Image 1: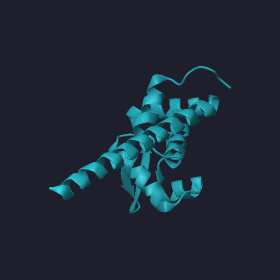
Image 2: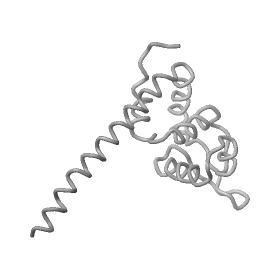
Image 3: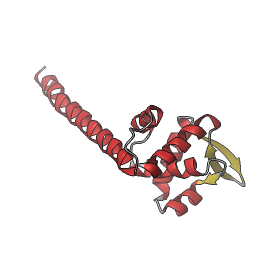
Length: 134
């Protein structure tokens, strides 16, 4: 196991693009085999993830230009965007070398999202209360 910190581009990708462990698994799948195009049912079957979760993640990654979508045989196929191939490969390598470091970043990101959500809910309670007074 490596003790080196994650490469900055991998950490940024985790911070900005990976919200769930399902997203991570999908990104790792494409990072390990960037030249293979897959449709959503194939990804869902290979990773044993729910169809809806996979479809949402694939569309999210396509919108973020991490994956590219093409249509073949009346199915949408997704493949690694050329610009993202090196980044996804680096993510897969970092995960294989130091899974704990990747999981630590994922946990930190989840906690930050939870704090942000709680702060928004707390501040919204005061805004709603103020509107009722007016």
